[in-house]
Length: 393
Image (cartoon, rainbow, N blue to C red; front, side, top):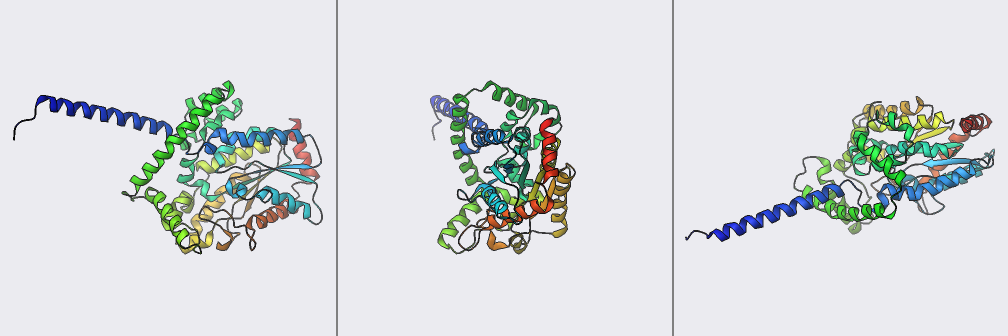
């Protein structure tokens, strides 16, 4: 076989260089895009577009003594339902129906899709400045999972935090969500500079790139499978296809899916866990402002977790106690509802509540919250006086 001419090797080397350069560029763009969520609504800008108008309206109403103002915080388990049927709506309706009647209240929805403890920690001073008479906050055991903390951390929300909280925030586990001190300062400057549509357009365009990146990683992950999360996307996709073929089959994770969904909460966490620390610190901000806080631990599908064999009661109890201590030690009320609902009260694998002609789980939840608020007298004159003291600060 005759030797290859020099031009062949030169062409091959040139082609290899081009391919390498292209891969470097693609990986670089993927890396940048990988710091962003896959949808525009998942960005910090999308969150603030939704939250800020509600905060401004709440602040305008704060000077009124009637009705009392309740702000509800949480993720999609609070906000997933039709208009006028969300948990805040049902809470207002339940309080209005109570006997004896509760003080007149107006409930403002500050919940948003996938908004967790870290996000509300960054927004705590903004929420406190709106001066509600009561804050009701839904947290979940799933918020402690590695999957939750890495998938939608929204570290850019640190830009909306009050500047005087920066020193204390630097002592928090911000590295857990991939936030560094220089990035925190950058986001602070960025929000105050108000760059407008150019920043928004950049974020949205990069998020589109991340869609393709996520799908590529999901396809590659099916060949590893050494950890539950590696094949998680494929498992979820297959289960979704199966649900279309068998519509009567409940939409639930398998064992590996639940292990990733709940993460370290299944192993038992303590007061040093990042999620627990952010919850406690946020409650502390509200309490120091004189605003009563009711934190409730969201119902999760314990029946299904037991069925797939991932629950050990002592370990889960340790996690629940960590949440409780973080809230109560910071001056808040804690209501444990994680075992409140059976399997048929959940509509999907993500833990959203069933709402149909037979069962309205979010209504049952709101009624439980209303009873607790009234039984504890959180909106009575003593609590209102505490809130008024906070307003005077």
